Image (cartoon, rainbow over all chains, first blue to last red; front, top):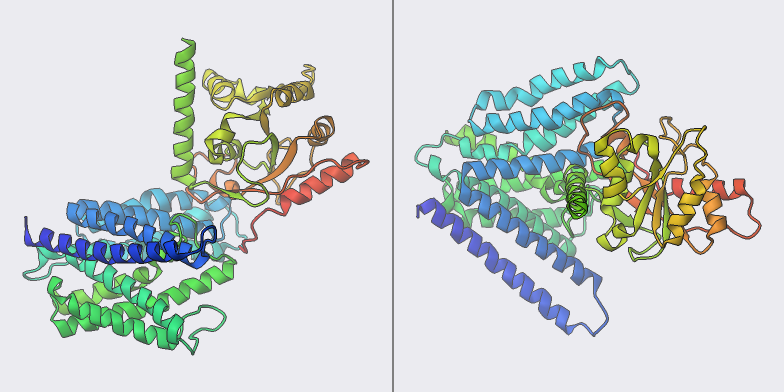
Length: 313
Length: 213
């Protein structure tokens, strides 16, 4: 067993320990409920914990399989997220081929480029080539009605759900001195600090949150976000042993990722509010859709990737 | 041979359901009824040939076994594959739409109801290619409601299929499809055909999700 595998297993068991504690807590509270009276808050909590079990298992297995597993997992996540996003965007039949290309050509190609580590191509493929070519395909069908809205929303969907998401597996292809074969652990680091930061932001926001950041849009408060980002930094510091960063640098990286992620999820809240939906879909029980679950990771991934690339390669 | 065909039909049914789930993550939203076995006529909007398989795929197994889509014979008997899928996989009640054939469609529909089957029908009669939410309903739904008043008529809205598989396109887009079941309606005493059909169309259109484009 390599040290990387051992570390992944250690992180997985650590996560499972937290989940076991959360499950036991939920079951104890459930047992103390009077018979026949289900508590909706508790039931939602339990559904969420169950979904978390699934997610930790999937991500853990993907990380253990290495590069191929990670690429397949995140390509699937991109597919599910793109599907949720394009369900809500403006489109007409004139966009049909352009959208089919987005799903069946652009998305797989992006992951092929990431998989082979063709950094230059994967960084410009969607912002340049898809950006220019897909509107041409739409325009050739000759329907000008709300054209700019249609192509702009399609491009936004691709940028968020394919381009940004693909920066998570791209962390594995960074050429970090003395760290390259352990790069898979950077994914675990990013996902854990951002998601745990979100969880604690939610917890503290409910407890001590007073000042809403974007009233009428999101329940997030400045107090909650401050506590969440601080927690993410502490967790990042504690996890620095799996990264190429010093403990202090790990705290900075975790804080930056968590902060961008939290504001990212406010952006997603604005989009959902505009489209009049509560969740992106129903595919993850208790959490909504893939975009709901990953909104902060999606925003954090490119920033984290480029900070790491700039300072450590 | 008969059992082999039945087995093949069941297998094909599974394949169609898995395909529908994988592409559109189709989901049933039970707003007005519970997913329990009861005799019902599910009447739905019709924008794409995928409508019927979508409704069929999202019904739970106990309900799916008893449901028979009412469909056009000229479409489902066009070639051998369709003649297998329509009557044997979906167990369709096939209606001949040609004018020279007096097929008495209502007799076949009532016979299916009297056997205890539930039905899936598209009261617009044709695929809706307009920007209006629904075409005017044909009178079949009213006739069923009058002839078999105990059967629940359930409005069923299939969202998004116009974008998933527009007429004339070959590749289906993987967008999320939701099938919403509303509260059942019945023909009331003394209600005229036009009044009832308007009420049925309103009940159906009210289920369309309000997504601002």
